[in-house]
Length: 233
Image (cartoon, rainbow, N blue to C red; front, top):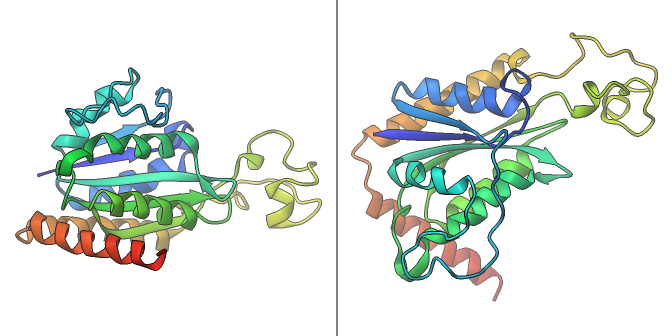
C-alpha cells in the first residue's frame, strides 16, 4: 500500500510548518509514501468546463496532470494546507477542486480511501483541516485524523513585523516586542503537536493494515454526505 502526502504550503521546506507536519505524519506510518510539495507548481481551480465528464480525466493543462496518477494510485492521503485569511490557501483549494474530475457517472476511483487532514496557521490551522475534511467527504474519503497547529505567520519573517501596527506579531505578542527565535512560533518547537502528527500516521497505518474495506468506508461516507445534505433541505 502507498500513501500520498501533499504539502500545500508554498514556503520553502525548512520554513513550512505544513511540510513538517505532513512529513512527520507520513514517516510515522512506516509505510511506502511519497511527499509532493506544491511550492513552485502551477495548479488552477476547476473552471466547470465539464471536459472530464466522459472519462473522468481533467482536460486542463497544468501541473495537476502529473499529480493525477499519483492520486489514483495512492491508497490514502495526508494533505496539508496553511491558513490564509481564515481559509485554506488558494493552490491547495484549487488542487482539491480538481478532484471533481474523479466523480462523474459514479466514478469510484477515490471512494473508500482514507485521509489525514493537516492545517497550520499563524494562530491556528483548524479551518484548513475542516475544509480538507469536507473535500474528503465529497469524494467518500474517510478522515482518520486531523492535525492542526501554530507556526510563524509571514509577519515574523517579512522584515517589518516589529514595527507594523496591524501585523500578527503585535496581535500575538503585543506592542514593542522584538522578534526572536524563542518567541517565533514553530510546529517543531511543539512536542505535543509533533506527537499528534506521529499518532495520526500510526492511526492511518493501522486502518490500512486492518483489512481495509473500501466498500464499507464508501457506504459510511455516502451516508455521512447524504445526512449533511439533508440538513440543508
